[in-house]
Structures are given as C-alpha cells and as structure tokens.
Amino acid sequence: MDDKKEQAINNPEHSIEAEKSTIEKNEIENDSPDLKNELSPSPRDLEARAEKARIEALKNAISVESGTIEKESTKKHSTPIRRGPINKKQLDKSYDQTMHHVQNELPKSSRSFSRIIHNKTVEKTSEVLGSTIARPNAILAGAIVAFILTLLTYTVAKTIGYALSGFETIAAFIIGWIIGIIYDYLRVLFTGKKY
Image 1: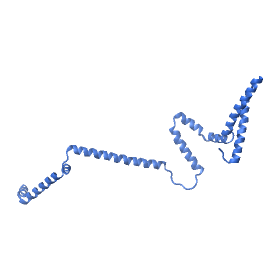
Image 2: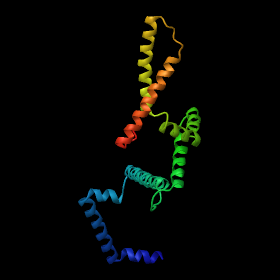
Image 3: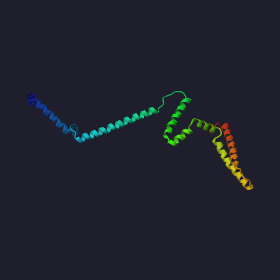
C-alpha cells in the first residue's frame, strides 16, 4: 500500500493537481479575507457565533411560547359561536362564572361580603325595593321635605314655646316620600322613561 501512495505522490499528474488546489486556496484567501475566516474561524468567532445562535434560539422559543400562550388564552376565553337569542339559563351561567371569577380576585373579607350581597334572594329583594318604595327620587324628595318641614316646625315650636316629640322628622319624611313617588309615577306615565 505504501508503495502505491509513493507512486501516486511521485506521479507527475498527482503533483500538478495538488499544486492547482494549493494555488486555488491561496487565491481564494487573498481575494476574500471573510471567506478565509469562514474556512478557518478562530475560537472567538466560534464562541460569538454560538452565542448569537443561542440568542436567536431563545428569541424564537419565546415568540413561539408567547404565541402558544396567546392562542391558549383566546381558546379559554372565546365562546363558541351560537345562534339565536340568549336564554335565561345561558344568562345565569354567564353571570355565575363572571361573579366567581371576580370574587376570586377580591381579598378574603371583601369576597365574603360580595357573596352575601350578590346572593340571589338579596339581589331580588333589592331590585323589588328599588323599583317600588326605595326609588331615588322618592327618597331625595323625602329628605328635602323632611329637612324643610322639620326646620319650619322647629322654628314655629321654638317661638311659641311648644315642645317637639321627635316624630315630626319622620312624618315630614313620609310626606316628602309620598310626593316623590307621585312625581316619579307621573313622570313615567307621561315620558315613558323609568329613570
């Protein structure tokens, strides 16, 4: 085998080919120093390239991960396409989910207060009272009339020396509340607007 290698090296054709390849390498190195660096990079270049590749890989991983998280969050919060009006069952389910989510975000004391206030029976009672006897205009009118009538009653009682019993303020509030309720119902009757 060694004889064959020596014959090939001593062969004039082989030496010409080796010379040509050496000349081509030298021409490439002289023409483009960047290409020379690519052919035989230094250890610093290798480290820099590796660091650059790591940074790009991290950026790609983060962008892929955030894209996945965004897709997952949109899947969680997206509702299926439905047709037709919302029925009572769907509305109640949506309300319960929203209340559960919001209450979980509250501090413990506020969470328990919220659960009491947003209890179905308390909410229904509050709605009925708010739409009948505890109307805002009725309460406002009751407070204003109570203030004015109590002031007048106190002034008159003080000048003539009459002692007040304490029921005057409550009676004045009831009179003002009745005036406010009548005003509210007449306004709704003529304008058609509740509030």
